[in-house]
Structures are given as structure tokens and as C-alpha cells.
Image 1 (cartoon, rainbow, N blue to C red):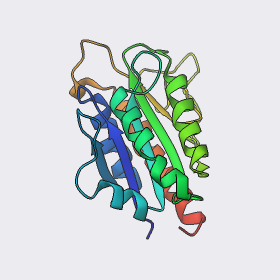
Image 2: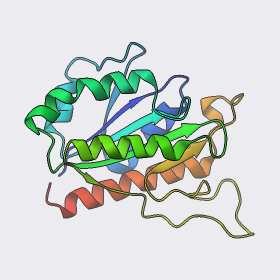
Image 3: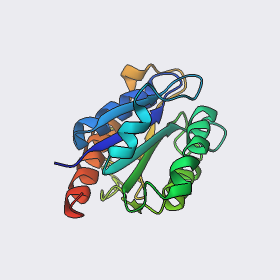
Length: 184
């Protein structure tokens, strides 16, 4: 069985809900980045032992949160030795607006994975983009390169659209399936 870790920062709880859904789908362990940008005790060991690492960050000002960036910069120790080379990687994000520059955040996460010489996994989900599409449909936000969610700025984490949570769960399942195919 593959070891999968979801390393993420959540400022207000929305990204935490997505991380939980991704983790359920992937059978993954959560590694939360705290408000100061630090991993919990044993967090680096969990990531080093993982076959796949799924990144998660809210989209703030067009990219990852500063807490996630601090983690990313600290991962240069693993980069220097190529400790994460050939691991499977993926990523997800949330923001308040439908676009909200979420693609910039996913590109950042993809670039980080490529710097670690990893293998990136997209959603594998068709978008819900027909006239009949409803907000709670899977992949309503329409992303291929990673899971995206949209939660209004005045909505609680409990109000994340069900379709976005299901998208996250299915995305986690895909990452687990791809990781298993790589024999990791």
C-alpha cells in the first residue's frame, strides 16, 4: 500500500476541509502547516517516507499563502539531495472568487513539484460545463491540473459546495491510483 501525505496550510478552515476530502479519497495522512509556517513534529519524516505528496494552499493575492511558501522554501533541504525525486505530486487550492487566480497557485505547486524532480498528477475529471451544470456538480470550477474549489468570502468552511468536496475526494482517489500504478 502506498504512503500518501497531504501537506497544506489553511488560514480559515476552508482548505482544511478540502485537505480532509483529498485525504479520504487518497487514504492519506494530513500534515498541516501551522499559522507560523511550520510542520508538526515528525512532519518532515512523514513527507520523506511518502510515495506521494499532495500540496494544498489557499490562493491569497494570486499565489500560495506565506505559510505554505515558508514550507516550500524549507523543502530546499530535500531538493538539494533530490530526496523527493520521482515521488508522485499533486495539488489543490481554494479562493473566494470563481477565478481568483487559482491557476497561478496550482502552477506554483506544479513548479515546486518539478523542482523536486517529481511526477505530477492532474484531476482526471471532466469539467461540468454544460448548460445543465449545477454548482454542486463535480469539477464545476473546471480544473485539469489540480483540484480547485470556490467558497464565498462570507461562507464558513461548512458551506463549501458539496461538488467541490466530492471533486477533492475523487482527486485524492486518482492520486492514490496513479501512485499505485507507479509501484510506489
